[in-house]
Length: 358
Image: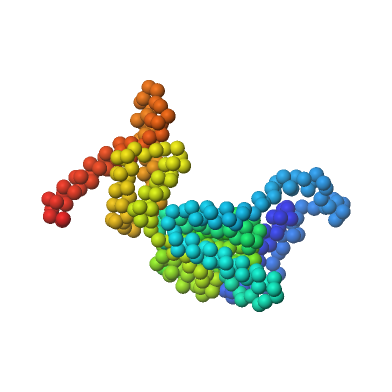
């Protein structure tokens, strides 16, 4: 036996599977069994099913009311406070203006052209895509586009199952969680397997497209990933092309921007850089940017350096008998530098010179 809410979810999954079967020419001869038939009923008929005050109180406790919408100016201030991303910030504000003017036209009885608010985020890892998606969810909530404004973040593993029929259910569960907010799919291109047309990722895409249409007034989907791979992903399916027509490009952070992020992270966590440590970090980030390759992690490089520096600082300070507040806060050059890594680099440079690579 199932509850009414469980029955509703099962029916939604069944409808989605039925639609997929119809599309593939697999329509059954018998009508689909509805989960409503298995809802647990209490004796006494409809009157006995009427919720009591205690039941309503319990339900209210289980389902807390959504938080009130944030102030738009507060969220925009948070967006403006992010390092870099100048073009992304302009694109976000243009999108807000577009939504505002559409609402004004509706209020005046003017025609409003259909518009998709689903987005494609393209760029390398660590460029702020998830952070901007979270802020966009708040912005859409603040201006009344979404009813809750939560962000649900998944990748292929959160949508695709290993057996026939399970992907539809798994994807539908994720969509249910995201209703009223933003569904953020990282590395969305992995849903398309060009070598295997029967890959379950295609099924997940069909479920997503159906829900994007069914819940177009209270669900925003953002797909993200590397620029080239995302372009191929969008063009792999006409349904994706028609629903995703707004692209945000996230550029790599420069060395100076990485240093700015590093300073901010140190300050936010109560650390202060020694003068020689700050100089070394600036040079290191600039070197990382100038010699970046496909493995360049952008802001993730900052996080990695900070976490390693804090661990080394802890080892150093723990050996002091009675460290002062300044000593507990200071990150020295020795805390930032990895002596083993520096030694390996030196050996590598010597080898290159010996082989006349320079």
